Every structure is written in structure tokens, then in C-alpha cells.
Image 1 (cartoon, helix red, strand yellow):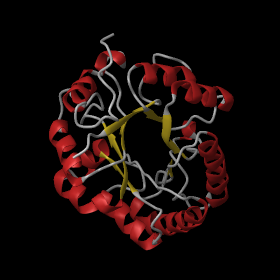
Image 2: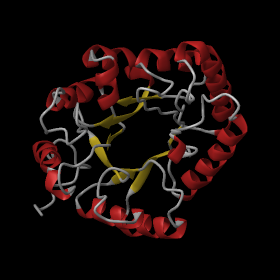
Image 3: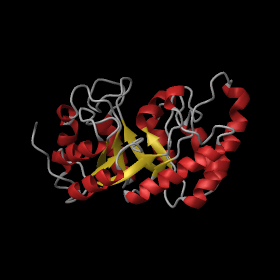
Length: 275
């Protein structure tokens, strides 16, 4: 079994620093070899590319544009009547991913529109999402990823897996966001084993407060890390959590993992020094 690979989510970690390039330098200094981010469309692309070149970091996942965040939007993939805007956003995401040599784009399904009943609009949203995913499958060459919240269209891993089956493209994969999977459905061991063949990316945060994996909460992450090693997960695990204090101060869990596994896999970095 090879060691797991972790990447820093720069939308959640190192937020003590204002800009994404500065967060990339901090992530590399902390020992990460890869990063991911939600929306970095406002960042200077040349600065991002320079930070990537200087640090040697891989950028492994970015999201499609969210729409109007101030209006409560969180993606447009399943929102009826917004297909043209979704596809323009996909084009922007593809351009950014190519510039950063990023191989995965998280296609955001979006929330149930305000004032609409989920049950009444679910079939229309699913049809819209499937249509947009089929379009995206012809554009993309890697994975479709997803997240959720109470108003997000995708509200169980089973629903997402069923939609991927209907889309029928092998380059579409499922994101296992352990924080959301635990809240929505629990049964993590069974779901990991069941859906492992279609999982393209993993993200972690403790439940219920979305802090570090070793903070107080419901999820036994050492057990889950062992399980992911056992089933043979080879991709990156995104650290999409909210640090309790500074990001650096909360990396003890990762230093411990690296120390315990550095002899297993020569590709896993040695433990960075304490801050």
C-alpha cells in the first residue's frame, strides 16, 4: 500500500495571506506538493503561473465559476435557464486549467433556486444537469467533481452516482467530500467501497465544525486513511477545512502522517519543521 497524497485547498487554508500566489508559497513551505482551490478567477494568472513555477506545486482541482455568490448561487450546472452562462463559465475554467496545467475541474451543480420547492423542480434540474454534463464531457478530458449543502441540488452520493450513470461518460468521476458525505448519509466505509471505482477526488474536514481532521468530531480519519490506502486510492486528498487558528499551527495531523509513512513511499515529503 502506498502512502496517501494531500493537497492544500487555498480557498480554506493559508487565508492569513491575502493573495493566492502568496498562499501557494506558504503551502510549499509547509511541505505540500500540490494545491487546489475553489474560485481563483480574480487572481493574476501570470502571478499564479510564476508561483507554480517557483514552488513546483501541482494544481490538481479548480471549480467552475459559481455565478452570483452575493445572491446565494453556488454553481450553475443544474440551474434551469442558465445553460449558456454555465457553458461560458466552463470555457473560462478550461482556459484557467490549461494555463495552470490542472487536470481536474469541479463542475458545480448549483443550488435549488430561491422560492422553488426541491421536489417540484428536481426533474427539471436533473435534466439540465445531465445535458450540461454531456456537453462538458465533450470538452473535458478528466473528472467531474461535486460538493453539496442543504440547498445544493446534489444531496446524496447515491444521487450523484445515479446521474453519472445516466450521463454515461467514463471521463466523469465523483468527488468524495467526506465532510458532506458524513452529514448527508454517513455509512462512510460502505460508500467508499461501493463507489470507489467512480471516485476521482477526495476532500476532508472534520464534522461538524469543518476544522482539521484531528479536531474533535464524528469522523475517525486515521481509520479512513487506512481504508483509502487499502482500497488503493492513488489521487490527491484535498484539505478543504477551516483551520482552528493559523493553518501552520494546525498541521500536526499531517506531519504525523508524513512521519509515520515517509519510509513507505519515497514520493512523500519528510515532515516540515514546526512553526
